[in-house]
Length: 411
Ligand code: T4K
Image: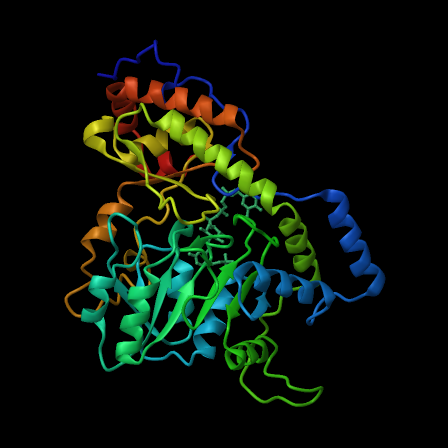
């Protein structure tokens, strides 16, 4: 017998036309002033300087260093290569302690260098590496800690610094989400031995593709720059093993353009966050994660946790129902790196035990924001969510007949 369709609910998951004709993405790029960008590209073409530490990249590095409050910035082609070069510049080897609740690039950057990521569980309140669990993971092979400022929230920097110092470990931060964020009035960039930004298209500040290593250590910066350019110290002189990690002039031009719009984009993200707060507040079981009021955030990620017992629907059901409507919510960073290859097939003896990571990864839903999303869009998604929750039983019944993978991959 087929499930009766509730005709009072005009929901795409029940066969209605999707509420949004145009998809709302998590991570639609912010685009700066076109005229200024075309001028910059014109200069690049006129001067025929396309790469290899040209003037746009130098200006980009100065700008990033200024915002991050550090002495040195080395621009890179993307955040992943910056993490790899950062790990090498710090001479990390053996094992490095890292959270599993992060984008897989954090772990891959280590494994790609032959370093074993040792996954540490997270704090359920902050979603950040739990400093109380780090020390138990240290072995004679441990050389460092790579923590993540997830969602732009600053990792427990003081606690991690103390642990690293006590055990003679290097401390590195994946700050891919955290450009423009700060903690206790200190901007992200100067914590740890070095930090790595991503300027990917989906980030708050983008250079289309791009990344950077920032540090106050001149020797680390010198080594990172050397490694990003094949180890060349002169025209025919190679002094170290290196790779090509350089940022192009075109990427730097896009990045410089982004910085000119930074204040306006921050304002949009704040406005959108306020709008999300308003529309989600009356909805049961969809809780925005709280932020520290004293800290500065870029609000590039609108992160909530779904409590199925109060919402009446689980996270996956909600995400599937939203995606059917062209609201492309994401399950970042499900299921956790430890459940992805190659880490899933090569756990340490006894397997990974990360109960907090797993329970958080099962609840998190990330909603669209950025300049492509308006307050009106958010109000409409709010009304839509209300409809979905009001018809929770019907939605669940409709989704029960579908391949869950397909429902979640919709769009
Ligand atoms: N560490 C952390 C903690 C990170 O989150 C990341 C990257 C890294 C390190 C590595 O930095 P990079 O090497 O990437 O610089 C995306 C991004 O590719 C990735 O940069 C990002 N984190 C991660 C969180 O998200 P996907 O596969 O989820 O994104 P994708 O391609 O589905 O894009 C999101 C949505 O944005 C799309 O549905 C459509 C829209 N979009 C995307 C792009 C690229 C556009 O409208 N236009 C575009 O140009 O990984």
